[in-house]
Amino acid sequence: MNAIDQISNSQRNAAQRSAPKTVAVVGATGAVGLEFLTCLAERNFPIKQLKLLASKRSAGKVLSFKGQDIVVEELTEHSFHGVDIALFSAGGDISKQYAPIAVKAGCVVVDNSSAFRMTDGVPLVVPEINPEAVAAHNGIIANPNCSTIIAMTPLWPIHKVNPLRRVTAATYQAASRAGAAAMAELEDSTRAYLDGQEYAPKVLPHPYAFNLFSHNSKIDPQTGYNDEEAKMTRESRKIFGVPDLRVSATCVRVPVLRAHAVAITFECERPIGWQTVRHIIADAPGVQLVDDREHNLFPMPRDASHQDDILVGRIRQDLSDPTGHSVSLFVAGDQLLKGAALNAVQIAELL
Image 1 (cartoon, rainbow, N blue to C red):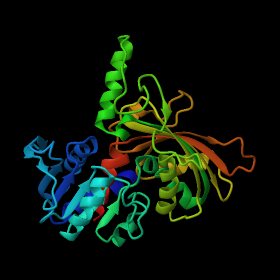
Image 2 (image 1 turned 30 degrees about the horizontal axis):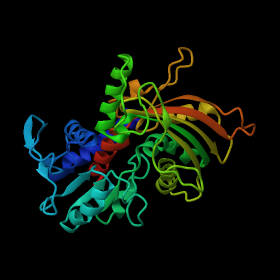
Image 3 (image 1 turned 45 degrees about the vertical axis):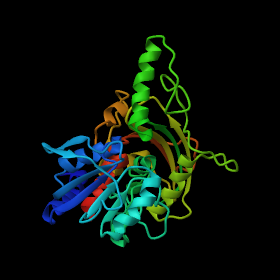
Image 4 (image 1 turned 90 degrees about the vertical axis):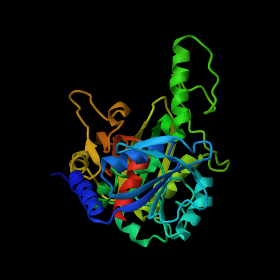
C-alpha cells in the first residue's frame, strides 16, 4: 500500500469509527455542492442525517444520496439546529452571514469560500500538508483556494526535504471555478462557435470558446496582481507556515470544464536535482506521478478530471538557474474535487 492509500484509508477508517454525524451541505445544488454529496457517499462518511440547504429559489428540489431522495430546504438562520458539521459552498457573503450562526448553534463549519481564509484563528487546511491545524479551530475551518491546493500539495513533500524559498506559477483554470453556469457557458458558446453563430458571454466577461484570458478577478492598481493571484501568495504562506515564502502567480482562465493545470518553477534552499524531486513525488500522498518523457505523456486536465489525486509531471531542472536550486514541473487537478469538495470532506474526516 502506498502513502496515498495510507493517508486516505486512515482518514476513512477514523471517520467510520466515529459516531454518525448530522451533516448539512450549504449550496447543495451548486457544482461544488453536488460534489460534496458524491464525496460523502463514495468515502462512506458516517452520516446520521443529511440536510441539504440552498437559496429559496432552489428549495424544494430533490437530490439523491445513496439511493435516498432528499428535499432541498431553504437556508435560514434556524437551519443548523442539531447539525454537527456544515459544509459551505455558497459564496463569501452567505458564509459571512450564516457561518457564525451555525457555530453559535454548536456546528463546526468547513467553508469553501474566501470569507475566513486569512482570518486569525481560522485554520486554513490541506490534509496532506497541515492536518494538525484542524485541532486549533474555533468553529470554522477554511478550505483554501482551488489553485492554491492544486499547486501546493505536490510542493509540500519537497519543502519538507529541502525548504522552498521561491515559487513562480502560471495557472490554467477551468470553467468550474466560476460555477455550473460558467461550465454551461463554455459548452453553449463552443457549440455556437462551431455552428458559426454569435454568442454573447453572460457569465464571464470575454468569449470563452477557443479562447483564454487573464483571470477576471479584481486587479490591484498598485501591484498589477489580481485577487486570485494574491490569494495564492497569501494562502500558501499560511498553509506552509512560512510568512516570507516568495510566491508569484499568473492566473488564466482556459476553455476546460473542471480541472485546473499549473506550471510551476520552485527554488529550494539547497541544490536539488530533478531526479530527487521525481522520487519524492512518487511516494507523496494525494498526488500521482505522470511523467513519461519517452512518450511525451504528462498531466492533462482531461486525465485529472474526476480523479482524487493531483497529477504531477514534466519534472525537469530549471536551466535558467545555474546554481541547481530550481526545478520546474506541471500539475493538473480536479477543481471540483481536490480543489474544493474532496478537500473539505477530508477536513471533515479529520474532525
